[in-house]
Image (cartoon, rainbow, N blue to C red; front, side, top):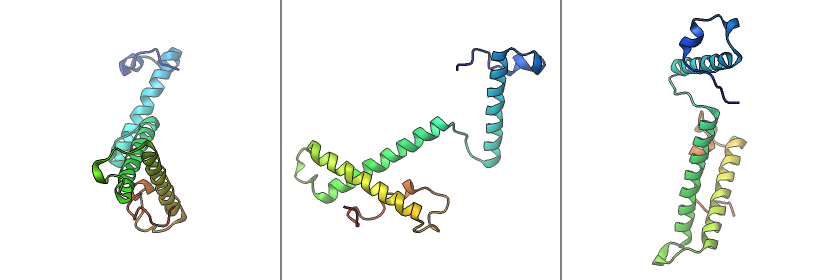
Length: 137
């Protein structure tokens, strides 16, 4: 539900909390929540992100990894040589292979392979570092 109240803290600073309208109360709650998040982020040394922003950033990162792996697969298969146009089938096969590689990397990370070097990082940063044809068909 959209908040139809001023987000300026001066509005509710002069009033008692019990005297605020419902809209002002919701706006105050949202503002307080943001202030807490900023304070916590400042303590941690990071920049706060909403769930939506974090999900978008992660999706963008996954797409970058998939594109990189797709290009890698196309290069190794020799589809890029000769200056010919790629067919839709070749592109789709390369994307499918890239997604398979990403799933394999995720599964390997979850299984616990190489936990020491993965400490504090997620599988996306390691996807595609191994050979493209390495055991995943």
